[in-house]
Length: 214
Image (cartoon, rainbow, N blue to C red; front, side, top):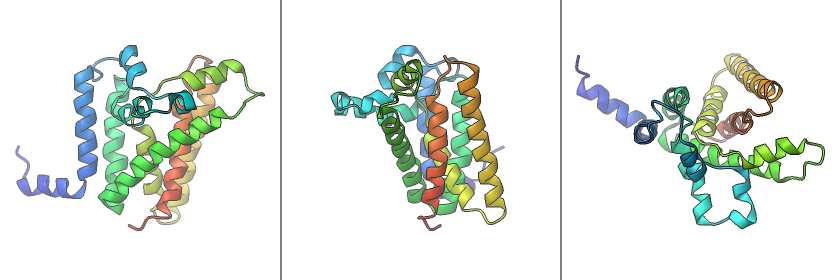
């Protein structure tokens, strides 16, 4: 069955940013074979971002480019397809609601702000934290567009009318907090950076939604 040409063009006109992100991430996934298996550790270290990259000794173009490259990679397997689905839903709804440029601003603005906030929080001397936790969080490389699409999800939720808005914010916020607690309690070897980033990105999207008209 062929899609009508006007339907395809209408989709391109309404959500071009979402489609571009989907195409690029899918292409990178096919190139790195992460649509089939986990991302190779060498690629994770080469293109992933870790909080210690914001230290003065690392602040140069070669390291800061990780802020961009890390977005288009995923950890592979299920996370690859989950990322595509979340971009299609969260970014697509945000773009449809507030327009292309506002959606792109939300995605990239929240992504960059989340990594900056996360890095600054971990850079604060943590005398009362277990040294192992601090070392893991500071040196753990992460990839994926999750901070950006959780920011868009926060924007979409905030743009809903009452009482749906309160319900969505409470449910999603509760899930993110529960996931962080569960990760922290179940295994000291499990990466925490992603769960912390999600818990930062979602309220940032909510806050940004209050500034953007749509």
